[in-house]
Length: 541
Image (cartoon, rainbow, N blue to C red; front, side, top):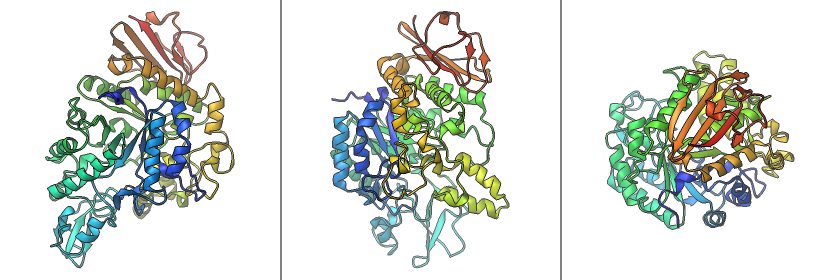
């Protein structure tokens, strides 16, 4: 029987199903492919899989446009395959977390097809409509994917609202019938045995488009508490809300220990620190390292005992961290281990994105025609129209495109990296012969085996989930270090975030002590940190 807070002591692994493992040679990853890799995931030490959307979808936005919440898309398999995945994962002590997209549906969902038939149709009010004349939308709100957030339906003489693609109409959460439909659907998945849910852009469900409010609308937490009460609460599920607009106070509501909303929150304050302030993610600037330390530390201190955070560098929307803030060339292994070490001593639930545990990198050789992602393609068109050069656009895509995370998983050095026997739906990264699971498992000093040590260490030491956090050397321009104290233990995490050799006066109590985890086998001196060096010390207090 799971304890109520079992998710505090585990690591979650995110799978992007399309790119994980193909079982039938059609070039697309599928549920049977995931089942075939459960031994590998158990060996890594994870206890939950967050599955990016596998529900029926026209795939306008890679499955984040759902046309049937209760069926599986044929490209991934069948409902029976999903049931088998839940059952087989359970044998490996792994729970399946589904990705729920509740802010919008596909325009091919039966609800929207009915909604377009007539303003008197009972489904019409499942979506957000405004009267208007063609060419004169209700206001000038923009879609996140570019262009207007309003699309005209001539036969109704109305516009519908969509924060994302035109084919992703927003659901009307102000309609209690819509909310009840959603609760019924979620409860049917709970009955099928899923272990939890990740709630996509959940902070946008209580929007007021007439007032230009998309995030954090006044009814947001009322709706989330009602959702939780009618579905998750008391079921010992892991639930995480994706909230780009979260601050500390909102996060305390999302992750209140009383379970009134979610288990934890995905907040992204640290993720925007290498873009120009007030600009788009494509407008690059160097990482503000001092601010990164302060931001991560703030979340550690402010949520301690009053909320729960998610710990992550990567996901399906983000570039590969070893290419972004590490060094994906001469220090790829060391910097990948260091970046993991920074997070894995912190309070919160860590998330690994597929391939992170072997140090997969960005696909920086891509040309413009190689990109698949709707956001990247729309950005390219808009920026070209606005006078940016192809070189500038390509540089931004190489650094930040979501497609960097979506290249197929690199299993071995055989053709297509062992991902498929057919033609892969998306280009495999060229470096798969050097970077792959087979190589990583066989090398005791690999990134994979380092992750295994970190995961095991977290599970064995309650100081990580319960300890008081103190940032050390807050103004140091290259070192990220902190200590944690709990009962009779002290944990030190010392990391050189960059590629220079650094000399620093470490606490005297570390003299003659051996790290419990380190990414170099030996050190010349306690106070000298090699490029991207990372150490964890556990002392008796």
